[in-house]
Image: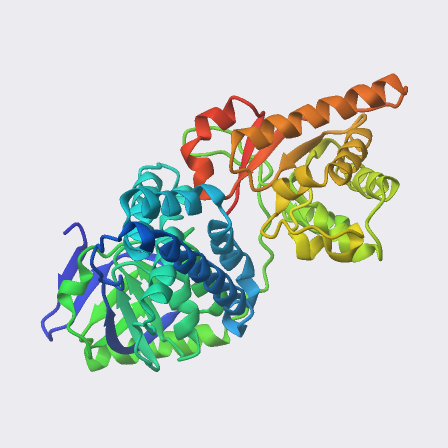
Length: 457
């Protein structure tokens, strides 16, 4: 099995896993295994295909509404970006078109098509050596199960539980949020790593969690007393009274502990094989960089330019943008900054564009390329702000190489215009955000066209 297991004379069994969320949890075990829906492959007649496509599109719309509502619930508010990442999957035209193509070409039911396409993406993600990317397969599965649940018109598979230790084979973000209100004592999962979105939420909510206990579900039937130590990674089944007393005291003591010491990163960070790495900040506001640098950050890895919409009553002008970008570039200095172009949807642009457009679903780079005048204005501001500074441009939510090619063409055109006008500009590097599943399938082609990539986590 690969787990470290030890037994003691009075019957308790100790397992050694990997701690991924601090704290101590004591309670009764509840098992949650293989939450996937079961359904049959249904062959459709020619005249049923269009109806099935409409049914699938309606399920996508409802799933988006559900995720938006879920992100607004109290347990999820602090990590709303996690469910925004799942919303990006439902906006990924590559992912959705593969499902629709399968329904149309194979004449099969939507449930089957969703599962087939999701499995192909999941298999690809599981092959990545990078843990951050590898763990994203859980979000694909979570989205697929949500769609299938809607299509099947079934309610949640999770029974209401209260003050227990959840034991599962694979933890999904939606499960943590759904059960957080029931006061989970702790979580034990057979799989998943530190960067898993589900465990990020668990840490935010203060729910102790241990992972990496392969086949652990074989050892529990449900109802057993258990202790989960989110500090050491130890899980104890059927603990003795002495052990219960020991960990109860540890739990009470840790509740009173408040961290007072500030963690300062060593600016000369290196990997185990000796490679130097920089820890960079993600920013919405320029004023935050001083604090980030105090804790050891060097440079800004992602600046979200959408914050300008909150500072301007109307659409930010080119000069507004130039001043904002230049101010931040001056603050960051030689540490360097990567500025993401507007990652907004039509609602985000709203009335600030002063025009109507029926192209619902447009977002980020697709919206920028649709409203070229807006994009060109931002590019000019960025080029001007980059003069004498290390300012790079990041294109958000890329789902096709053609989007990169068109964006690069516009950047080159605007650069040439500014040079002819005698305006001083820099030569920023061009990078992209890897956020949607379809981008993974064309990563080699993307890397051929850009200077760097940012992973959307």
